[in-house]
Amino acid sequence: MLKKITLCFVVIMVLFVNKGYAEAIIIDHNCTNLSQIPESWIERAKNTLHIAYQHTSHGSQIISGMNALKFFLPFGMKYEWTDNGASGLDLDDYGISGCADLSQGDSIDSNGVCPWVTATRNLLDNSANKHINIVMWSWCSINGHNIQRYLDNMEILISEYSQDGSKARAAEHPVKFIFMTGHAEGQGEEGFIYNANQQIRRHCISNERILFDFADIESYDPDGNYYYDLPMWDDLDYNSGRSSNWGQEWCAANIGTEIEQLTRGTGVVGYSGCGSCAHSGGAGDSKTINCVLKGRAIWWLWSRLAGWDEISASKE
Image (cartoon, rainbow, N blue to C red; front, side, top):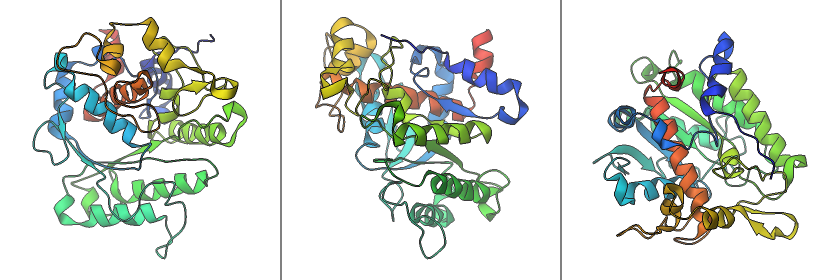
């Protein structure tokens, strides 16, 4: 199997050489090794981040992955999160009303922006939500959507609410916005989706943005083997006729590893594996590794947004 392996921090280091790229944060399949994150930064993320996340079913894969980490007994309370901020990380799941997701908001409304921009403005302009400092929207299917419109509208929100933004709240309560790619649909590297995701990646690198690379994370198994071009689907099936599944293959070959235990619960008393992963297997199914890896990667992102400098950490 072809391997495409780079280190997560290398992406940032390469960007660091070019001042124009110094602040880009790219979270991809290289960012799933939680042992590399100092616990102090996980704690800081829980103490300082207040996240509003809006999604439909595919976007819930991140939440399912976070729940797997939350309920994995060997981790204790390390990855605790709650919807209302009562304990652990404060993440308001389905936290933005007025638009379901990016896919269903790909149009221009009476305000001259996408409906999800209007929904975000309504959230952030409410004085009760001044604590919100992270906003994340996900795609359902990205296939056939207007990617330049998405990028332009994300930039509108950034210009208004991020540091030095035009909105009054930006001075004391700036917001960070997370870009996202769309999941695989069996098109391979010649299809619309791959090129759409590439456009988003290029934009985030060139404009020093924050990207959670949803598609990249599901395209590689934990050993770095690459499947997207075979082609691959959103439940980790690959090859013509969807005859193989890399989640099932990897878990069968790696019984007892932390990732396999998180996925299937093998040998863990009081934990039976990841819960149902939307479009990627029922509870405890090997395909739910898709959610597990995204849950691990999102905690890498939360730590980075809390201030963890993985470049410096890699040199220690």
